[in-house]
Structure formats: C-alpha cells, structure tokens
Amino acid sequence: MNDLINDLYQEIILDHGREPRNFGECEPHNKSADGHNPLCGDSLKLTFLLNDQNIIEDIKFIGEGCAISLASASLMTEKLKGKKIEVAEEIFKDFTNLVSGSDEDLKVLNEEDSLYALKGVGGFPMRVKCATMAWHAFNQALKD
Ligand code: ZN
Image (cartoon, rainbow, N blue to C red; front, side, top):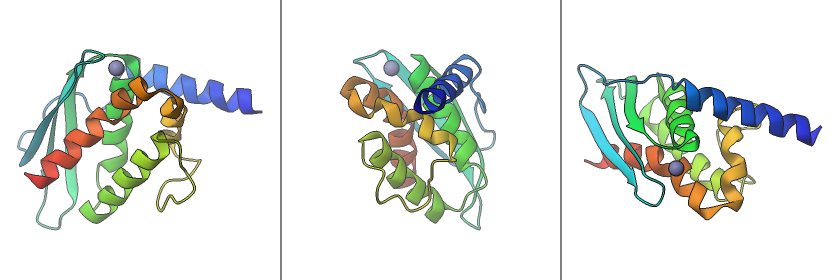
C-alpha cells in the first residue's frame, strides 16, 4: 500500500514537472517575485493578481529547473488560485512544515492533497530547497 502511494505521488510530480499548470505571466498582476535556487539551478518568476476582496484571482509562474521545483510551483499555483490570502498563508505554513518532515500540526492540508506528493523530499535537504523555492517567492511577493 505504501509503495502504491509513493508511486502515485511520484506520478503527480513527474506529471506536473513535465507539464506545469498555470505556466506564464498574469496580465494584469499586482504582485510578483523571483525565486532562485543556485544549488540546483532552479529559477522562477511568480506573478499573481490579488483582488480587492483579498482573493488570489489568478496566479502563474514561468521558470526552469528540476522536476521537483517545477512540480512544486505548478501544484502551488493550482492550490492557491481562488484562495483568500489568509487561507493561502495557512497553506504556505502547512507546506513548509510538511516538507520539513512534520505533518502533525497541519491546519488546512491533508493526505488527500496533491501537495502531499512533495512530502517525500523531507529527507533530502537539497530537494527541500527545490520544493520550497516557489513558496518563498510567494511569501516574498506578499510582503512587498
Ligand atoms: Zn531543483
């Protein structure tokens, strides 16, 4: 059973790595940030449109790098699109906990979630940077 789940998770990562969703630039957008992970050679530019109800109306990224960085950015945009900013921030916290190997105190994510596919990177510090690059760019864009 665990092998099956791992296979499914791996399939999600390969699928999103090969064909990233929400690839491009939001026009118009009012938030943007760049992400870099020199250790692996990953980079991306994230743009999104936050409307006056504080909902992420649209979110896209362009980037290049390893399958994990692209899959993570792709899964992130799918997850955050249409979310209120408060919820998006909870998801951000949950995700960073998840990939640092602790999924005990998650507030909004659960095992049904496609983001769980990236939980496996927890054991590999180099890969954690790949998986979190897009998320840190998102967090950075919120602060600017
Ligand atoms: Zn990478």
